[in-house]
Image (cartoon, rainbow, N blue to C red; front, side, top):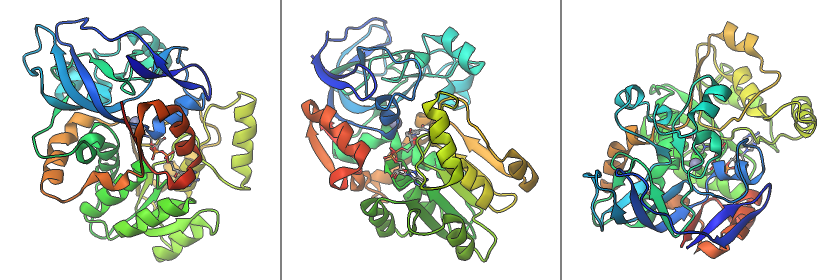
Length: 389
Ligand code: NAD
Ligand code: ZN
């Protein structure tokens, strides 16, 4: 079959690889009908995530048709149409029973590596480094879904791929980011990053009743998309984020701050961002946490920081004193996808939201490598790429 394969920094290729096979009785094999490129894939593309190996199949946002099921898989049958959550879940361990799906205790087959790196393992993820199991990803014609009897969202008839594909990652990710803010009707929610995750966080914060939502980015098309949803926008290259947020909140700062940017934050001319870039080049720091610093500084005392943006390792110069003394609450994590999908699927069916608004590019899987660059460079108005194998 054909798939997108990682060979090193900036080197993703469209290649022929062996077809997947059932390896365990709970597995399923699906034929991918649609998949997408996520901001998290860019961290792999840019060489920031440890634990990738040349030859790894990438992709963790995908859906398709069940072609084959393992003997013990009673939940799925051939022909079912499913979205596959990017977090692989057993559905049975202590964490899964509590709904903490992204830290499932049993699906990371490289648990020992993760235990060493993080203290305790987290869930297995598709197409995302050997630290999280090294499972072949979904930017491919076929995928083996391990623990498929639990790791799926069944799609009812009458919905297009484009309406439901993002249930596997960015829609619940934006939603969880907003839910973790415990939004009150008087809240200002400031959201850094108007990429796909930011777009869903904006719409989720509005659906959850925020007084005002402020979107921060520097890419015109992304800011327009945010404005169309009802957000106030700030271009961080044209004005001071801190000054404008204080202005919009009577000098008090936003109650809730969401980091939908993560470890590759840009910043122009600030001292901290120059330091991060220098340290990252010298391998003295893994991440560029400019957005985190800005959120700590501008957030209203007793406010909440919600962090869906991905970080990889060790961060420098975090003003923890400010955070402690202001009494900020931090919420973060990879998304507990299946915790939210029943509710979100219902909201799609009821027409509260149509997630396809975010798609700007639909191309064949063979054009995947070029699309990584278009998405990364935000060329051609690119916000979200869907690939058709
Ligand atoms: P993206 O790269 O398309 O979007 C990031 C946006 O941040 C870009 O539009 C960029 O211009 C903007 N940005 C950069 N520096 C900024 C700054 N200083 N201030 C404000 N905006 C800035 O990616 P995405 O797909 O939207 O993903 C965003 C983040 O969410 C990534 O880190 C990704 O890994 C992460 N993510 C996390 C989960 C999860 O489960 N927690 C799931 C999906 C994605
Ligand atoms: Zn993702």
